[in-house]
Length: 289
Image (cartoon, one colour):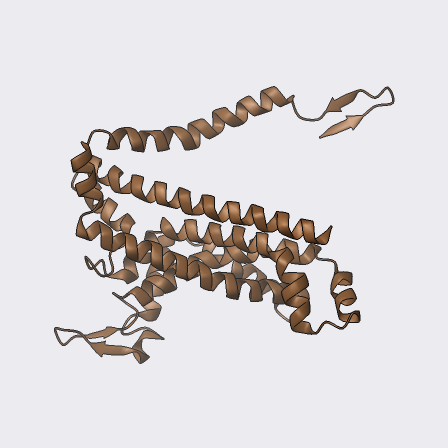
């Protein structure tokens, strides 16, 4: 930010570019790059055959499929319903709107362990909802269809990911000029065409950003999932749990090897989403111009 004086000289409120850039690089290196480099360095203690055997063992592969698949599905569902929630909060006035708006941020404020215990209590065999969806397991005990199942994991990941979509889309909706919709309607477009051709293209970059944030958040979720997943190997065991088990056995090499796989795949997926977001934003800007 700069303030222009009468002589044309600029007085910068913050320090110069070189100083702020240096601080930025230093801070990112200290907080982000050094810990990530430590993960790769610890993994290097394994030979390539040991690394490949660790990251492709059956329990790890099953956890990858469960973690990435459920996280993607939860983020996708949140993208749809999060858009609806943001639309209602921006476009309508109703009693209790402030309360609903505050409840959206509740997953941010709740400790993940508290969220996990709450969900497990709610959807367990004796919970308020789970009691209506029970079945006997292989040992004859009554179990809820939500606990110790992929459905329960999906619910937990959906719960913690919703705020990312709503809070990313909401500011864009608030800044959206209603005159664009009125102009489209005056030209004969119906409500669906106005939404599909005018509103949605402008919201797509924000939706993709919220989707990427919700997806990344779900990949690393542990506390809210462990209480409801049941931790059954090859069935409901997410990748963070596998990493924690290796750490509990003091096998840091295997733990960091699996973490590296998660890190690399997550980075590639998020990079792809960001490239798609950039292309969509550029395409929309070109069309509007």
